[in-house]
Image: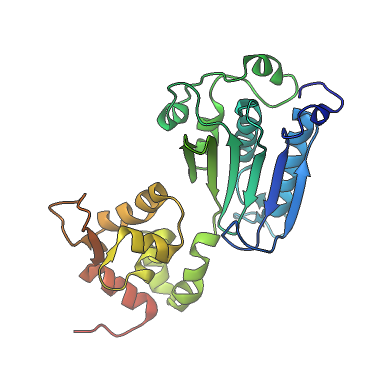
Length: 288
């Protein structure tokens, strides 16, 4: 995998399978781009990075009109997560690394859950445990890799909207990278485009797009599972950290059983402030 001419002759599963979908689900029957990326580690890194770049958007981010724009997800974050998957995957498992690109996220999935006693919080803090010591001893010669455990913290610094998932039962480790626009694209058409300029300036300074999207699906009392389904979100921690907690903290939604926040009967509903904000965004007259 480091210096061989044709490593897949002996290890055909040691590839990267990359697919870009037009929607948000893996069972879609359509795809925008697909590639099986083989070769040495360096060749796989180069091919996978090229696949990511050609299927991501470039955005202006305040640059001049004639600028080429920046990748919507910082290249440093993608580079670190891709190297992590190549260097730390379980090479005793006959499975390929998968790169799945959706309209709202990018998933980099590598075979093998976190080794030994490492936890998600450990790797977020830069702790490391080498699964493949022989490989890591030489990987720095062919990859942008230092082996200090700094890769994932650096990726999170560049792009905080990364969810790390250690699936012990499925024996895989995933990095789910949220794309910057797709999560609130539906809100843009339904709510944001209808906001008058003075209201927009006031609201967007205080309320995130995720919270606005949450408010737009709140109809009556909803359980956490019902909200997750309405938002079409896959991962509970992201729902809690980006949607529920900020909305609760700003007083835009409330719990139906506030004295028992962990109750299995817990539901959420709009507060008076949340209804007022949503009505002002939609330019609806308030109801009594």
